[in-house]
Length: 455
Image (tube, rainbow, N blue to C red; front, side, top):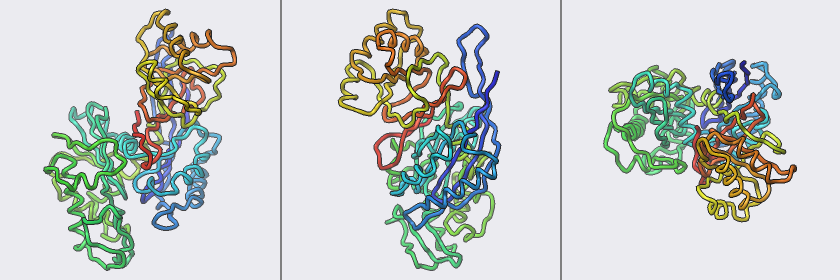
């Protein structure tokens, strides 16, 4: 028996804003006498909005009310209400995610995507979602080769290296089409601060296509370095985003896959002032570069890759043998504390007042005595409600052992078959069958130190 969920993805980018409505099909893939195993078995896109320019009040502030009007109109066009939405993701990407008012904008929009929403994104999550939305994992499996996916947008280029359908690592560069903006007459209206020392363009300067080509060539050389098609130089490190969790290591031989707004300009000749930015000139430079000298492909989705990834691929399901007692669902933005021993609980929780999810590996096929020992070890250190996320399939047994040692009013939640790292946040939704939908958020904003990852 299957169940269908409606999922909304919202991508608020440096240049564009988009929405996608998807239907996720959930089935129990276990045999009739086995423990239920709920899986998302199909993802179908029901509606894609037009691509809107992200409304800005000025170079630093997003227009929250204009965004809300756009999204309300797209809900009407898609024929859905807020109450119809089961899950979804609001993804603030590129330079936009670093605006001072990004948090306020997300709070203004979060209610449009129901009770179960990813609040924000950073470069690691965006890289994964763009790769999935462009079907790069499937391509790496089909080709039997490593695939380096480059999602080149308005403010940043998100990188993901994939092997046999799995993401090996991610990265992000300050390379994009909207780093320079132009009016219809070719006058520069904006130059991103990340280009300081790289180009001499200034607002008010009138330029030609030929005058933009050296800058486009410089940015493409950085992409070539990131792809291992050119020896690395200091410029690669200079244009790496501050929010990226690790230093990007160029891969060996890999097929290059492209998505993002600039990807549409690689094989299509657009007038150089078509979008009022560097995008068309950058796209032509990529086409002539070493990036396209070997095997390369355009993603099945280009400008829509991230929003499709957000709407279709941001949610996963826990195991079905979960335990929940007196914990109201959904839970949103609960921080994760990963522990490897009981001393970690004391050191990491300290005097923390807000609830946190304890993430631990657990034990494969534990005995009753092992489950009891784990429950008693946790209770020696924990106060208040108990929220546990396990990798191994033992949540129900552990939850029952905890409940037997706590008063009936105790709040206990144990979920399993989910791996999550320190510095992440969890959204946990109401049950789907016997499983719980989970969204892992691994960065709220670049200003914070938490790393970001999407499983």
